[in-house]
Image (cartoon, rainbow, N blue to C red; front, side, top):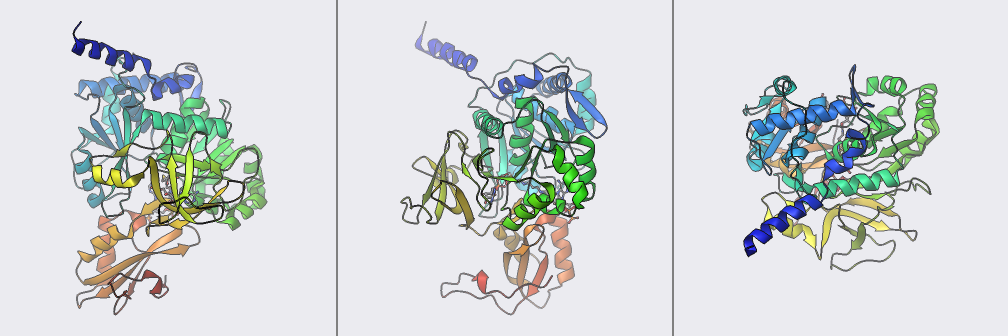
Length: 500
Ligand code: MLC
Ligand code: AMP
């Protein structure tokens, strides 16, 4: 046998020998075929049905020319087809690229052009009028196909998804996450949060972000528990969903917990009585919210810390102390260190940048070698978050190196909004800053130095038309000039307080 053919055989063997995400989903899709696994609206689905639907979807995509490594963009609200498509992609080795449904033309165009997908899937027209396959039609067509499994050709190191993160330079970057990244994340959470098949997960987070995708969807399929998926979190209806489903598990962002504090005490107690675990992340959970929630629901929310690029890094323990204001201890297999400006690790209690290393960490940004290189140092991913460790090893986050704004758990880079505003009539100079907000955590506010053409109503309309709703400045403050350092850098902390 020639050297080349030995290499090919060896390669095939490697393919056969490594597991991928689907193997970890066998606990539900294979082992619990007849059990109801999913509720969505008034419909229920057994795990066998979920598996069959995704096999049909995989066949449809394959029939339309999809091959391993191709990208598929989805611009969808939470729905069962979202799950079909994610699983179909995993089964085919196709790279799944979710797009935030709140994104408008400008944001979608960037991701579409960057990811260069073979197809884009949506419910209706996509902003920017990109050609898209309509999801209901796809499902109708898939229904007629065989539900036998397609051949799986993915390995643990294959890229399962590219998830776009808000970019520090304005344009967002696609984080390439492998099957192994997601596997490690899911196994860690199931083990550390003691998730079992008799759990009931209420999932109201959007599936296009890793919080719902990796922690929600994957943990559900890996544990074989029952999930009620909501199209979205609507605080007016949340109590009804809790009471009718009686979940044992809930994953949310701080804004959701703040909204839940509005419930009357008797309703809160009732909800709390069936719950086993409330988990919070994606943005800082204020200590007073943790305390009020404990008072009302009789539960101590478990706060954890993650990122698109790393999935979950640090978590408060399930057993043991959940320390208010901290994000807890590094999850198994994950190394964390706090590093000073000079690149050296700092001691207990000292603030520095959080560096993370482990099998959970992504391997790079899609088509961005330089950004990837800059993101790592000595094998550690530089998170850009600032924090410190206490003597018990618990980590506290205390801000970010960049001026990233997190509103309701959605990330916003001021630079992106500033660039957009500068392109509009009437704007000579602009600075966007994050301002504290009781419910959303932070909201963006724009400080505009006007030219004579400035019309704030028109400017706001332009924002509504072109930016995702959470990026629209909550207030536009007109100022004569922006405070700057001698080097011309805007001193955002010197800007006057906004008026809402
Ligand atoms: C919010 N909106 C949505 C939506 N969420 N629209 C469609 N689908 C969704 N999922 C829009 C609303 O239409 C409205 O727009 C605006 O956002 C606020 O809506 P609201 O009803 O007033 O909601 P509110 O009570 O404020 O709650 C918002 C929220 C939302 C908490 C439900 O912010 C949310 O779903 N956040 C989760 C974000 C997330 O999953 N982040 C994880 C990133 S991963 P308008 O136009 O009417 O103002 C990550 C890593 C990690 O960070 O560690 O997890
Ligand atoms: P994203 O890029 O959307 O994945 O957001 C990741 C960022 O969310 C992190 O870098 C943190 O700044 C922030 N984050 C996630 N979890 C927490 C938390 N528990 N407390 C504070 N910030 C958090």
